[in-house]
Image: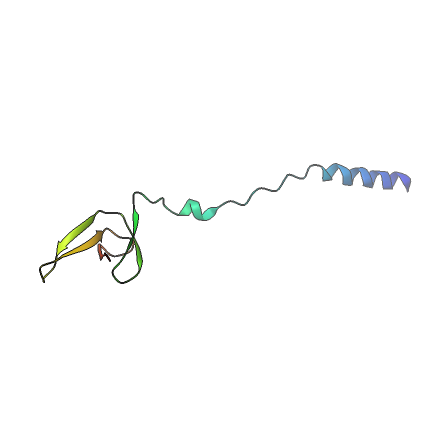
Length: 84
């Protein structure tokens, strides 16, 4: 009985020190998301913030004035009117 208890204790102690340390969790969202290249946030005329990659342009309006627009915005919009 004493030999069996010693054998059981030695086997349990042998396996306990070989447990590898836990790995830090991997950030999988950063790997899937493409990096932003040269964009900037703008305040649109409708009150929303938009992220655009292109330059800001001035377009002529029908009334004779100029409208400031951001170009190549995120999503399906090519131009977004900006609030001054």
